[in-house]
Length: 214
Image (cartoon, rainbow, N blue to C red; front, side, top):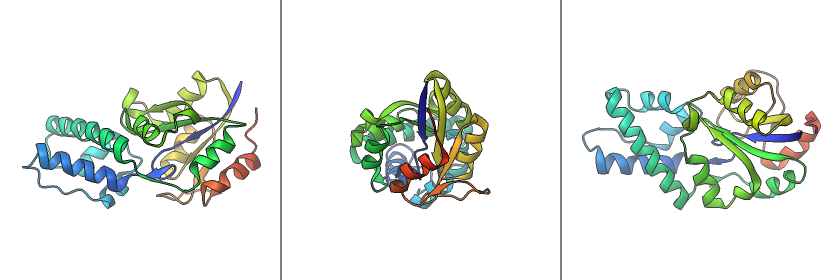
């Protein structure tokens, strides 16, 4: 049986809002010139952590459902290609912290993102060697809580903590029955008293403090 640290993506490991907005605008310019929408990084911050279907309705509320679905598929496909080539803004000290943590813990990623997004992140930075398993909404359309539980079960993790930055991450950790650490440097706040970090460098100490045990 293993002990694991499961990470959220956006607002926890990196900030890709600017790059995602750039990639989506490129798709709109090339394939959907009649849709008068210009996406900004602020638009992306507004929908971070939401599932793909909800995100699409917020950003493209006036686009008919069937066409919106095709638009989102095009945006997500190009986004993955763009991020695998250009990356995003990595939060400081991530690799050093992962090197340290991986000596005692197995590391995982669970996100509400599309299929291929986590892979683009790992490919760009060469981080695949640190991550034992990943799961996302785009793979199975399951909630984040369900996917955290799925990763715990299939990797036989005895004790786990989820590291995330928004209220939805905390709610998902409770749904999955795992511990939680708030990445307070990220995009959101938590309506409860929870362990937190103000930078990734603080994570090893806080994980040890809350007692993630084998």
